[in-house]
Length: 111
Image (cartoon, rainbow, N blue to C red; front, side):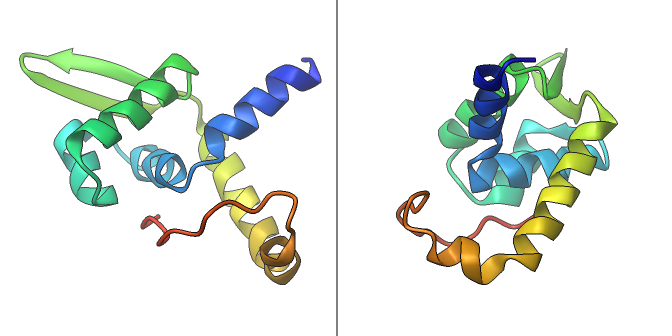
C-alpha cells in the first residue's frame, strides 16, 4: 500500500464525527436515524459522513425498504479506532499543542 492511500485513509478517519460513527457502528448494525441521534448533527451532514465511510469501504450499507442500515465492514477498523484513541490519550498534550495539524476546534462528537 502506498503512502498516498494510507494518507487518504487517515483523512477519512480524521473527522471527529466520522470516528464517532465508526465506533457506533462497530458494536452493532445501526440505522441512519440512530446515527443522526448519536452524533447530534443534521441528517444531511450525517448522510455525507456515512457516504464517505461507505465509499471508502469502512462501512457496509444495507437497504431494507425505506431504511438504511450501517455496520463496520472489517473488525480491524474498530481496533484501529481504539488503538488511535489510546495513542491520542497517551500523547494528548503534545497533539493538542501541535500547530501543524491544528484545525478549528469544535465540540467533540460522542464516541
